[in-house]
Image (cartoon, rainbow, N blue to C red; front, side, top):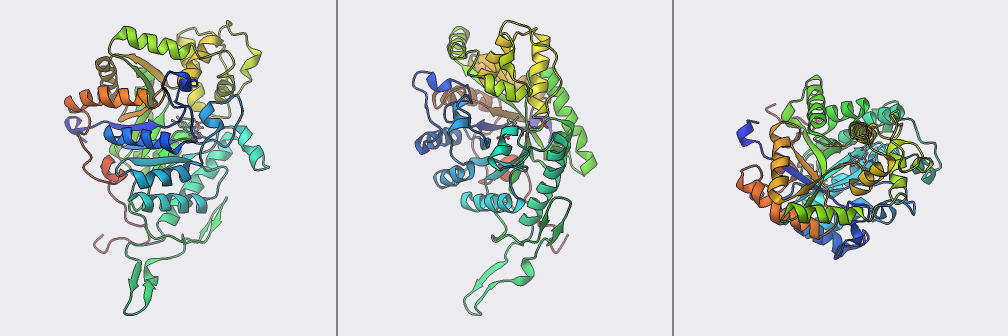
Amino acid sequence: MEPSTRRMHLGCFVLGTGNHIAGWRYPGAADSFQSLAVIQEIARIAERGKFDLLFLGDSLTAGVNDHPSFTARFEPLTMLAALAATTTHVGLGATGSTTYGEPFHIARAFASLDHLSGGRAAWNAVTSSGPRSAAKFGREHPAHDARYERAEEFVDVVRGLWDCWDDGAIVADRATGRYIDPAKARPLDHEGRHFRVKGPLNIGRSPQGQPIILQAGASEAGQELAARTADMVFSVVQDLDEAKAGYKSLKSRLARYGRKAGDVFVLPGVMPVIARTDREARDKLNMLQSYVTGTNAASLLSNRLGVDVSQFALDDPVPDLPLPDSSHGFARAMLAKARRERMTWRDLHNLTGAARGHWVISGTPECIVDTLTEWFTDYAADGFNILPPYFPGSFDDFVDMVVPILQERGLYRRDYSGTTLREHLGLARPPSRFFPPADG
Ligand SMILES: Cc1cc2nc3c(=O)[nH]c(=O)nc-3n(C[C@H](O)[C@H](O)[C@H](O)COP(=O)(O)O)c2cc1C
């Protein structure tokens, strides 16, 4: 896409108690991720801001010391099905694990969500970083490489299942009594190293043909999976040069898979803390940070770094640590920042408590827009995954104060021009590989 017509894409990372670990303590903030009213309000704000996507992460663990929205939350597909009924445009994305799931379940669930929402479903294919997930299934947690090897085949099977039906397979002809055209549905007959899946799915081809695939891994294996299969990638970055390098690294892998730079959108996660003046914004951030202790982010930080951080004194410097088996992306960005800024463990607890390792910016709406614009025009980002520290107030701030400036500057849509997530992204609806169009 020409730079002049390039537009930002925006996602919102939804956690009912806020993305900040203690955002729920902010005056007036929602304090539950088990509330339909809370998520409906978030969805209303997202559509007012013409957002591309609402994104629901998911983990399979629940510890009393985790982020409160990790500990007590709805099952994401169930929740998005509820939102599909009360929203009209915003994309609905959720995490589904390739390590603790079956391709048939994922393919079926996201095809269903795509039908229910009229073409707004997105699947975040994750390999599940936390070893604690294994205990929920009576299994051993596979190593990083093994998780990604399974993920590669898993995604192929899911996409194959989505392709088993052609458009128009359900004919429902009252005169003849014929319901399905048998020539337009076929089995998958996949036989691979990890899966044997006959198919087809028991649901017709979905409005987007293929729901959108999200990916958020940043290891070598994660980037390769994303380059081959993802439409949108969430990155974890703390600094512009790092973001530019990550962006380039991913886009440079695409040609190998016959794909172009415009086929995949890179959205770094960012937590904006916004106020009318710099001083007010700083006060707001300071207030949020005053809720972070040496223990309430410890579980998250230990998971990010793959070590038990309670063994380290808070005022000791953060040493160089090897990349953990859990997640390379978060650890790499957080350890690089710690090294650059000579951080102590207390600093790293503060960073993790704020945005779980994502980038945090604070300031006036103009200052936030200037920074996001620089990242966008410097090809560090195709848009952003916004992490409001608390809901609904700080999401309102973004939509009411930042979005209008982005629109005035021609960087962001004033209204939706389509109804499906593919249309928001400008991505064509793919034909089924098994039923190519007659002219092609
Ligand atoms: C924005 C974002 C959202 C993520 N959401 C989830 C999630 O919901 N569940 C999960 O298990 N992992 C999640 N992850 C982790 C990654 O998807 C990935 O599986 C993990 O980081 C290991 O990949 P890596 O070593 O390639 O970085 C997320 C990562 C990012 C950056």
